[in-house]
Length: 248
Image (cartoon, rainbow, N blue to C red):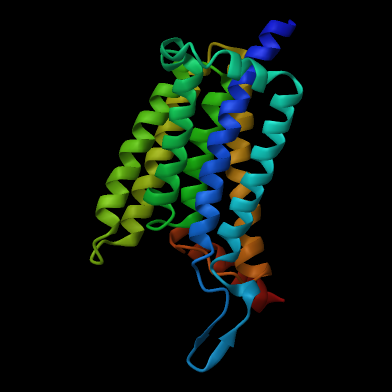
């Protein structure tokens, strides 16, 4: 990679880091309104079982990663290039970098406001990571379209339907899980003739499955932290843990 190409990428990284930092700080501010300790039925719960703990950890990690990205962008000349290019507003508005930033903001907003409050957290995390990792890792706009658009539509449907207390949570969980699986099958079919893309798709899927598969049991059964919504997948994990406990 030549220096001009690196500088161009670092300029995009600089803008991305600013937006990530703003979103992360907003998420942290909202999370700080959650109670860190409470009393239920006369029993006091300590801070490490608060539902605020997980979003605090996520927002904190996002802030750290945004700052690391900003520092790298500044070090490699991305900030200077960004400032120098500010007068070219029209060119920036038409650039692919801005489009990627808009996509990133849309993905995070759909996850935070559409999926997390309404469906099983493991399913929400799996669907989110699928859309977050795959198109950016493969870096092909053709791959982005069948993931981003349907993900936003599904999230809007979940947001609208999930607000009704009569909604069957298991059906909503199954709907999002089925949609995520179908999206990934489409991407797999689109990538099957490109060995590199198909390999990257497999790595993306492994990351999207394993990450929540590690985090969810760690918080649910290790730290005893209640997750935002516990549906069909987390209930299945609880049943497995119960059976293992009885055998032990």
